[in-house]
Length: 419
Image 1 (cartoon, rainbow, N blue to C red):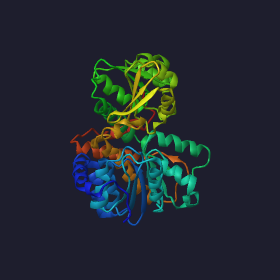
Image 2 (tube, helix red, strand yellow; image 1 turned 90 degrees about the vertical axis):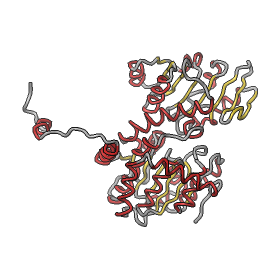
Image 3 (cartoon, rainbow, N blue to C red; image 1 turned 180 degrees about the vertical axis):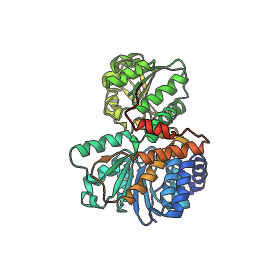
Image 4 (cartoon, rainbow, N blue to C red; image 1 turned 45 degrees about the vertical axis):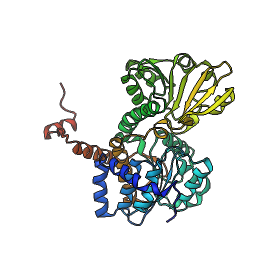
């Protein structure tokens, strides 16, 4: 079996960590147990470009349990957990191409190695696998039954491709499922982003002014956690409704050019380009900390920051680069602008990824069952899959809920009964 990992001898440590995560992923465990019996993915080639973490490892093990022939590569150069990658190779016979800190060339070499497997189904996180497939392997697009996209950033890219009439196979927006974005994006990103910033800096959040770019589900989650730690939270937005929502949630809303003057910590969570730019760096206080929790590091204009700086001191502390401005101010960039929650911390807790990866696994099964019936567009996850995952999650948490009576069902389906 071909693979490319940092050190295969890290496998046993990785196995322990994967097992620990599995304890907190009961929904995925139930799906894996059924997959082992029913083999819904038997003989199907799957290519997955995802963050290679303990939680992702449990998804990979579940897909293989269902009979899939699987190859996995990293969806970000800094998010790979090397011991996990090694364990998947050595202990689960899954071909993995992922090394933490890999350069851009190696990153794309790994994507090509995954696509060389000629997958019928793909799982993507950020759409690099699918965009590479469209750019360089368009002649093989007919071989793809369907693709699952995990992130806001990836869904944005793929909808743009679809709107141009250039999407060559059906894609399923896992990110837009309720049991994904309402929990993974909000609670997962919120906690893990704060975790990453604290691990990198060992800073006390209480009393700090935390500027958050973007009040989508990820921004909301991070705002909730930063506020809970005693931070003064400022939101910057380009969407009137989200800005209004942030205001009514009790947060201050400012344009970035004003927030830049008073912020102590800045974090981008938008999925867009150059959210923090040179004019913002020029206004920042000495000691400002800059981080990103969006999928790509393009949210921060790092080339512009580098050009502005008189001196750049790399790794003044692990994952922290110091940019010294001509006037003597220092701006500290975390994790080279990569996802701070994965590059520095361990990503989302397994408990919340349990639902996201349950959606991934069940949608793969759905694509196999309905192969050839989908248009080449970005599809929503079927509601029954969302509801099934929520139901299983509640059951594993020991929570029961009410059911509608026959009278209530009739009332909701009728129009005659009024005041």
